[in-house]
Image 1 (cartoon, rainbow, N blue to C red):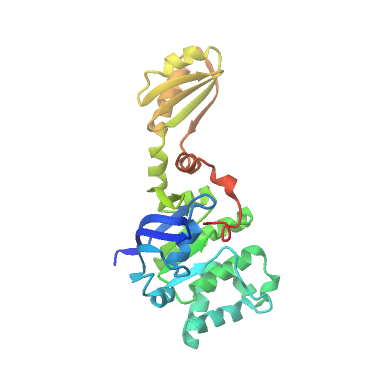
Image 2: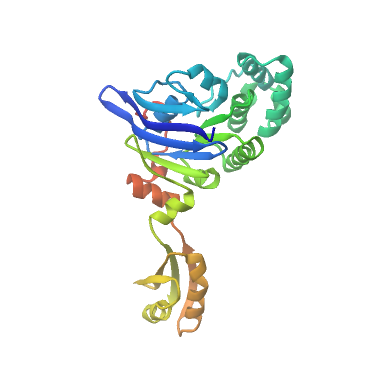
Length: 322
């Protein structure tokens, strides 16, 4: 089996509304796949279908080699799911909740002890595992929820906005843990997120869904390259026309524009061209106060595909995603 998740013309409708409208997916074993979309785009509905929480209206999908419509029990034994809002009993300790989760998956006492040691190390809970959950911070609760989704060693892990509401340090810690799970366990991870930098940092490939359809897919660098060129921006002290004329014939520069005291140089590979721009500017009679390279970002991609910035769509998604 080379694909951990597949979907072909997957649809899920609620009355006349097509929340998921013909989505095609092929996520490889061992891949981290980032799934982005504005509110109401259909990403939570897609995840619920893949996790067998909702039945598809039509189309096909498989997870870990099993059909979501006919083999739900087999899929549930092979996946881990960490939802955005973890439902954890605050009166129990982390260890008690992990033991209960292992029992629900039919693990033996010996297997539970072994797996508990593994997941506690992976998600860095430490001695807090024996404290009541009501004493945990938000970041610690998120780590415990992740540990519970890993106790049975799933083949595929679904993470629904795993760092929403966390401080920057806790967010970075979760990123480290996700990378470790992928690298050390070879785990396939399907990640929905509202943070574009998170997808850029973690995902091998990214899919952007809008109005129930997968509108763009590729590696972060491929998607960024697809929407435009790099920009080398120089702020000058002097005549900007002189500076523009000096850099116009530099190798790799596709065009030059003047905006006030700045010149913008378009380049297909800005990192390669910027040294030539710097040399050309140094050789003309114009002072340069700053020289910066701007490459397209995933935010630019998202805006191009959906017409909205993802950062404007912060919310809880469970209830309002179609």
